[in-house]
Image (cartoon, rainbow, N blue to C red; front, side, top):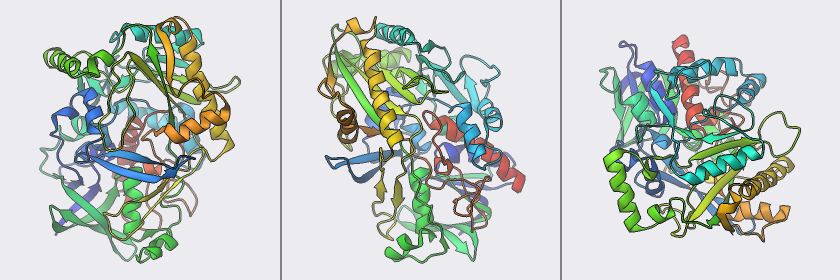
Length: 533
């Protein structure tokens, strides 16, 4: 048994940022616990190595969902299981959410979480290759950059987008209007910059910071109504670590509500059903889940362009690997998607409600637990999703055994709003591919195919063949009411000394990918924790 001031569970973006900030005071002791191993897999550093990583259960969690849609398809939600968490295995797209998203969070009764509060955090964490500005940071720990000129096809995509009225920008995070440009990504000099690279490894030598990989936390230890530590396992041995000040959960929108429920904090009927005692009846733990459902549109190209010839064959992969090793450039140095667009699905909206991501390759059918595979014939892929779904899913325990699978219900497209916007997103993807000069490069649509044309068929294609965005939020959402899991200072209601700092606290989606928002959220949370110390 050991004692620390702060025990942080989860070494993803939230946990790494907190370890960085809270251990800056040499008089404060910090323990950072990660269920996965150290981030020594060489593919982590290779940006397009993520395609091999996301199917590897040694470095990722694989969470199956309830059957979805008419086809009763079981989806697999992947999360990082190594230092850096999902930032070590994701597609590296760096977005921040719009001003209106963060202001809406504050307007829901969460003071201190508006855009004016978060912008300083974003600027503090960023080392943007475009340099500092009123809305960008430079010199911070998290290096971000854009990549241009990787394939001539991409310039045609941008030209097609501008023809539809989307403004070309160098920095997709600089404005909140309709726009298209090369993705901002957590990449620098051809190498992935994970949360562990940015925030943890530069400070892990601090004598007051202890990093404990290969350690699974099974529950939070409670003494009365106070969290006093955690109980878990390290390589088969039971471990117990105590927290003098706080236990901070940063295990993500899936891991954190699971851990709270295992600790007796959650819906009483769920806990009793699996034989657990109820410490705090909190029905919203695991509820209010929001996730992006992603549509894919793939085409066969009329010319030999794109990456398929290289990355879809063994000989091509060897060639690309040799180029990457020699120069840190080429297709392997790019993020998961080269281009990003934010757009409005219909006229009259005050801001974009859809996001597209485009890459000059096309994928073979995705198989759960397997690496991503590309087609060998030239192709192109666009994925799209509505930015702010209001359908609510849920997550709950199926057993008191910490290793048992979860019951995850995505509940996609449960509202008229989500179905209407989803159809608009898909039709916008088709408009992009039909616009010149891109249209002349395209032979025909291969996925889902021209037969998918009615609104019902489009919705069915998403439910039967879409994927999650890996952007779940809301399962421990913050808010001002007694039934909200955490308050505006991210403290768990009903339990002293227990805080949550990850995507689960967001009651609404912030527009785009979550790595950047969670990093800034944790930076802001560190200010609150230090002020409460």
